[in-house]
Image 1 (tube, rainbow, N blue to C red):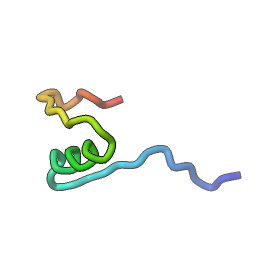
Image 2: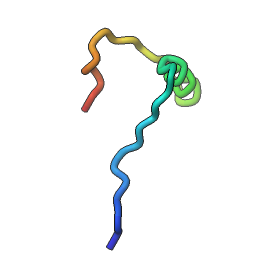
Image 3: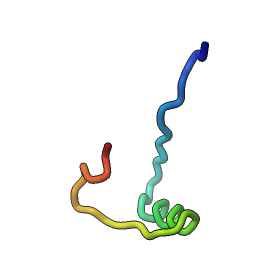
Image 4: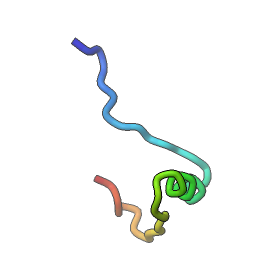
Length: 42
């Protein structure tokens, strides 16, 4: 029986757009900016 289960990973950074651009370059696509802070939360 497992002692713990990893359910999510959170990445924090001082410049979110820079991090988004970095991962978009690796995974393809492009980052988008939203004025709604709740958009994208599941």
